[in-house]
Image 1 (cartoon, rainbow, N blue to C red):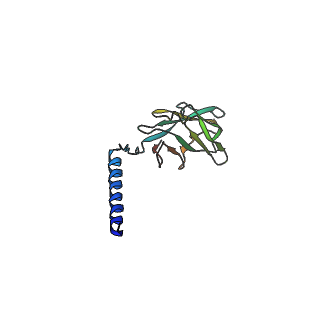
Image 2: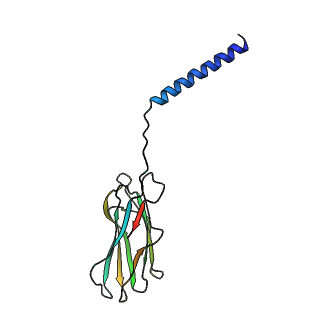
Image 3: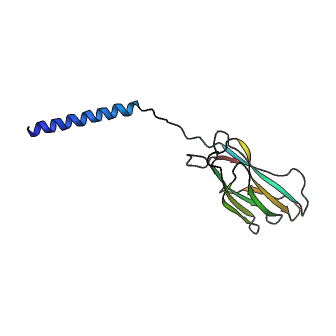
Length: 166
C-alpha cells in the first residue's frame, strides 16, 4: 500500500467519524433556558402604632420574588443608633438557614445576617424572611433602612435578583 492510499483512507475514516458524530449531536435535544431577570423586591414592614420609649417592637423583612426563586439573601440593615437598640435579628421559615450569624452593632446602628433556603425547597412568592426586634430608647422618628450590601440570590443566577428595596 502506498503512502497516498494510507493518507486517503485515514482522511476518509476521519470524515466518516466526524459525520457520524455530527449526526448524533444534531439528534440530541438541547434544553436552553433564559436566566430569570431580577424581579425580587424586599421591604421593611414597621409598626403602624406609636412606640413609646422603652417599648420593644418587631420589624419584619418581607420579600416578593415575583418570577424569581430565592436560594439566599444577605440583609444589611441600618437604623438610628440614637433612638433604637436592636436586640435580635432572626430568620423566618422562608429562609430558615442562618448561613452567617447575625452581626449587630448598636454603636454604629447597623446589622447584617446571611440566610439560605432549604436546598430541596427554595421559595418563590411572598413572605417574611427575617424579623428584627428593636427597643425604643429615645423619642422621635427613627429611620430603619436597607444598606447597600443587601442582596438576594437565585439558583443558577450570577447576579443579585433584587430590583427594589422599600
